Image (cartoon, rainbow, N blue to C red):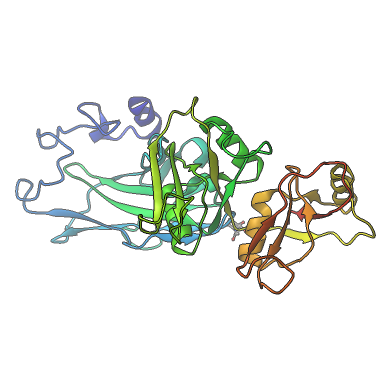
Length: 360
Ligand SMILES: *[C@@H]1O[C@H](CO)[C@@H](O)[C@H](O)[C@H]1NC(C)=O
C-alpha cells in the first residue's frame, strides 16, 4: 500500500522510490545515506529535527471535534525549509492493529479508513501539523503518532486521546459468566458501548468502581476491580486493586464484560406514563414519544454526565430494569450513587416504567 499511496499522493522528486521505510518509499538520493535514522544529527550538518507534542492525554467527548497538537522545528533553525511528509497514525493497542490516519505533503493530504473525511491537518501557525478529528467516535481513543519525515530525518511525537465516559459491568440475561470474548464485544455494542480498555477500567477503579465478577477487557484479558478486600472476592489477603486472571481464550472462556459508554449528546428520561408497562409496551411507549427505549450504556452515561436521578425502575432495551441515582437518599437503594438493577424480569410483568432516549 505504501507505494500506491505515494504514487497517488505526490510525484515529488525525492519520492522516486526506495528504500522502504515505515510503510513508505522515499528516496535517499539527496544524500545517498539510509533514511529513517532519528539519531542523525551530526551526520547531517548538525541540524536536528524536533517534533513537539503535548505530554498530557487529551480528554474529549463523543461527537466533538478535537485537535491533537503537533509542531516541529529545526535546531538550529534552517535558512531554507525542506519539504516534509507528515504522517499521522494510530498505534496498535488492545489487539487492534496500527491504523493509518492521514498523510500529507504540502497542501495535499489523504485520510484512511474510518478517518476518511473526518480528519484534516491544522496548519494555523508555521510548522504546525496538528490533526483535527471531527465527530469523535468511541473507537478513536488511543495513542496517535505524529511523524515528520524530511529528506534526511524522521522524527515523531505521541498524543494520547481519551473520551469522557463511564465503565459499567455487564452480564448476560442468563446470569453470570455466559459471554465469550466475541459475545462480550457484541453485548457492549448492543448497549451503545464498547469493551473497556484496561486504562478505562483502572480509572473507574480509582473513582470507586468495585465489582466482584470478572469481566473481559479490550485486550482479551479478564479482570475485576476491588476497592474493599473481602472473602468472596479473592479473599482478605490481597490489597484493593484491579485483579487480573490474565489473557483468556476468546472462544472458550466465558465471563462477564466491562463496557465503556461515552458521554451522550442526546437525552435519556423516565417516561411519564399513567401505568406500568410490559417490555413490549415500554418500547412502544417510547416510540410514540418520538424516542427509543434507552440502552444500558445510555442510561449509565446520562447518570454519570447529566446527573440523571430517578427512583423509579424502568425497562431498558436489553430487557433489564434499572434506575439511576445520582443523589442517594433513603428508600432509593444503597447509600452510594449508582445505577441500580433488577436484573432481567419477566417481560410480561407490569411492574416497571421505561427509560427512553432521544438523540439530538
Ligand atoms: C465540528 O466541525 C464542523 C466543521 O467545522 C462543524 O460543522 C461542526 O458543527 C463541529 N462540531 C462540533 C460539535 O463543534
